[in-house]
Length: 168
Image (tube, rainbow, N blue to C red; front, side, top):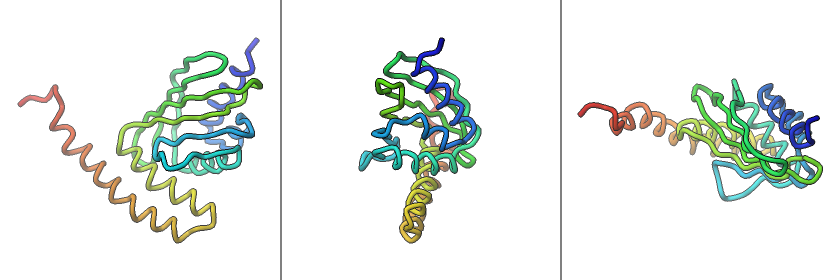
């Protein structure tokens, strides 16, 4: 018989693959915290703030597929692939659970850099628009789009030059 952590993890994975932020939110403890891969400036604290982040994230990500899961009753690491706009990405999710098997902490890690800058240029504006601050959303978008363009260009043109398997 599955444990509460196994049941929550299965529900979390299904919600992610379906893009269902409300189903993902149902897996969270009331005091859940989400730690973003994009900033150390703040955390999303409490179920409602994490829900808002999940809603914005589900607008950005497509084709999510979990492929690896490791852990125990208190901590799980999930690994997935997907797309953020045109950018393929990989993500690791560290989930910590409370005594009832609810997610109390979610720490996210992502790669490659162009996918992260694509997320930054879309999720930030979506989050502040949802807070009723469309002007700030435009400013964030304007500030992050050039960063994404530079990282995308670098990934496609400069980074391949450093490939150790490339002939000299």
